[in-house]
Image (cartoon, rainbow over all chains, first blue to last red; front, side, top):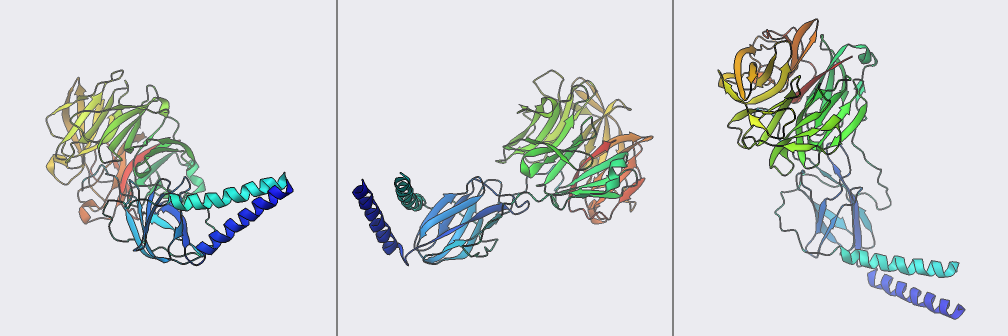
Length: 119
Length: 354
């Protein structure tokens, strides 16, 4: 039993070392919260595209308006957020550095609905 | 056992991190996106994000407002606020914040005010002292106006359009609750205003998709079929507010382009079956003696004398947006007004009676 545990721990240690060796200095991460620019309310279901010349990643905000992306190549990314009822928004110049997680929050401006009045 | 659990957690965490990263990869979006309008500010990874909620913190109401017999609520579509005035002197008594493009309003039988929070796709019920009492979500629709039946308490909502820019509808919520039942009329695409008569018949107006033509229609009490009201002795040019005027036993029908002009007015419409005869018109003058150009929703009420109250949005550019009170149905020059409330784009109006 003790040997089994030692073997498992050794395997895990090796896996972790290999992973950290492979990842060290090669990737970073990004996360943030998407909110309504008028009310400040977090927005779930926002389609977020994170793109650079080296890679493109897509994700969707959760119930708390939070998005995240991992294993991003160090680069300068453009964030694009899209949700029906809001103006699509692109933000360029978001840097990702190796071994760091950057936080980039996004505000979306609601598209005004029609109003019962003369133009 | 504890050690085995620790091992399981460590492996699970490592695998979760791997699969989470892999799950982010997918093909690019096909849509063309406009240029950047916001600049994100990098935050150190160690920082935490505070939970964010709609900002109602800036709301205020004067403590003496609760003693005012009649309060006028005006929704400001442009500012996403609702301002509260004492009647008849039109003194600003409070501002409710945190809305998303609020449009029309209506009062219930308890002095509370329903506000169409149009951008939020919901109706919000507020007490006369500014407490949020109830939220009625109307997902997929943009509610623009409402009315409460005095005969049975039903809440009717005019949804000006769907959230995907499709045609709107009329929805009726028994006692202001539930999921509601939708009604449409084939001639109307954008539904503007609603109003009940004493018998529970529901009148509503709106326009076609291009706003070229305006229509008045009815959902008779107990019916599931709508029908157009054929207007004679006049034309509805741009649909305005709809309210049954009990003292005159007629339907007060706002026209934002009275007789085809830029002026707003109120038609007196006698209803008989599916016919409506315009028997008179209330014309309105602003605080500078000029015409009232943008009265979108007015509300008729009584306190010793009958009056019409509502906002005028930048009356043809020669007055500031102003909250008014006129005699009704005489109209003419206002008895009271407030042109210092700093409206952005006021649209809706309702009165809370104590």
